[in-house]
Image 1 (tube, rainbow, N blue to C red):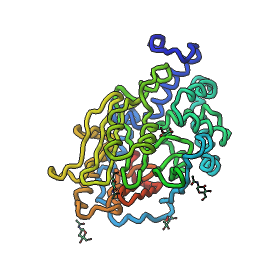
Image 2 (cartoon, rainbow, N blue to C red; image 1 turned 90 degrees about the vertical axis):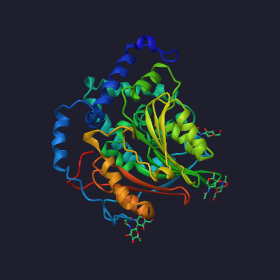
Image 3 (tube, helix red, strand yellow; image 1 turned 120 degrees about the vertical axis):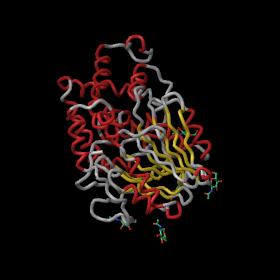
Image 4 (cartoon, helix red, strand yellow; image 1 turned 180 degrees about the horizontal axis):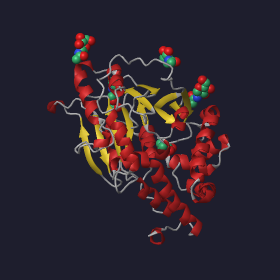
Length: 387
Ligand SMILES: *[C@@H]1O[C@H](CO)[C@@H](O)[C@H](O)[C@H]1NC(C)=O
Ligand SMILES: *[C@@H]1O[C@H](CO)[C@@H](O)[C@H](O)[C@H]1NC(C)=O
Ligand SMILES: *[C@@H]1O[C@H](CO)[C@@H](O)[C@H](O)[C@H]1NC(C)=O
Ligand SMILES: *[C@@H]1O[C@H](CO)[C@@H](O)[C@H](O)[C@H]1NC(C)=O
Ligand SMILES: *[C@@H]1O[C@H](CO)[C@@H](O)[C@H](O)[C@H]1NC(C)=O
C-alpha cells in the first residue's frame, strides 16, 4: 500500500517508511484513552468502566457556577496577533511568553516517544518532519517556522504539535499553553480564538457580529490518520481541519459563507463543526466525513429545536454507553428552558459532571452579536469521571 500511494514529492527511503508506520502506531496508543472507550473492551476500559459505575449516579444540574471563581478557574491571558505582519513574525510575543511551557510540553511528548523503537522515533521526528512543513499551505508553514525560530525548539517538534494536535489535547501539559488570541488587521479585530500557544490552527473562535465556530473530534474507521498518511505520502487534496477553521474565521464573510466552506471543503479527518450566527435560526452542527457532509442539523423553532448540542457522536445515533455526556447535558438544557438561557446558564450546564470531566481543558462561552469570547481553564475535582 505504501509503495502504491507514495507521491512524487517525497523520496522513498526505508527510514521514511518506518517513520510513518511508527507514528501510526504511536498516535493510536496515545489516543487510546478515548478510542478504547468507544471500541472493544480491554483491561483498560474495563478498569475505567468500573470507575465510571461508581460515579454513575449523575449529579444534579449545577447552578450559580458563574462567574467562575476559585483558584483553579484561571483567567486565560489575551494576546494580539497582527495579520499585517509577515507570517513568521506573528506569534513572537505569544511564544516568548509561553516558551517555558511549550518546551515542557514538547519534552513530555519526547519522553513518551523515547519508549518506541529504541528512541528512533524521536530522531525521525527531528529529521523527517521538517520536510513535511513545506508541504503545508501558506500562511501556516511560515508561521510554524517562525514559532520554531523564536522558541529554539526543533522545527520537527513544532510541526508534530501542529499536525497531531489531537494527540496532545488530552495531555495535561497543554493546559498552561491555553491563550486567547485577538487576530487583527489594520489594528481592528478580525476574529478571536482560544488557542494552544504553538498551534497555528483554530479549535474555538468567533468573528464578532458574524459567527462563532468550534470543532469536535469525530471518531470513524476512515479516521484522521488515513488522511494524514495520505498527506505524508503525497496525496494532498484534503485540508487540515484546524487550518480550515482558521481560514474560515479569517476570511469567510458571513454565516452562510462559513457554512458552505465548512461543508464543502475536502478534509483530512472527519469532524463536527459547530457554527453559530447572529440571526434567528442561525445555529448548526455539521457532521463531516473526510470527503462530504453527512448532515447539517440546524436550529428550528417550528420543531421546538431551540438548541443543538454536540459531544463526539453523530446526533442521530445513540452516544456510546461509556461516554454519554449528551443525555445529562440535554437534561440540564431542558431544565434551564429557552427563556432563561444565558452565558451563565450555559456555563452551569458545562460545569455539570460528566459534561465536565477530567479531559475538559477549557470552557469557552461566545456571544456572536455581542462579539464576546471568554474562556476558563477547568479543573474537575474528585470524584470526577476520567472522560
Ligand atoms: C478574571 O477576569 C475578570 C474580568 O477581567 C475579573 O473580574 C476576575 O476577577 C478575574 N478572575 C481571576 C481569578 O483572576
Ligand atoms: C496600528 O496602531 C499603531 C499604534 O497604535 C500604529 O503605529 C500603526 O500605524 C497602526 N497600524 C495600522 C495598519 O493602522
Ligand atoms: C449580523 O450579520 C450580518 C451579516 O454578516 C450583518 O450585516 C449584521 O450587521 C449582523 N448583525 C449584528 C446584530 O451584528
Ligand atoms: C485570507 O485571505 C488573505 C487574502 O487573500 C490571504 O493572504 C490569507 O492567507 C488567507 N488566510 C488563510 C488562513 O488562508
Ligand atoms: C427563569 O428566570 C426567572 C427570572 O430570572 C426565574 O424566576 C425562573 O424561576 C427561572 N426559571 C427556571 C426554570 O429556572
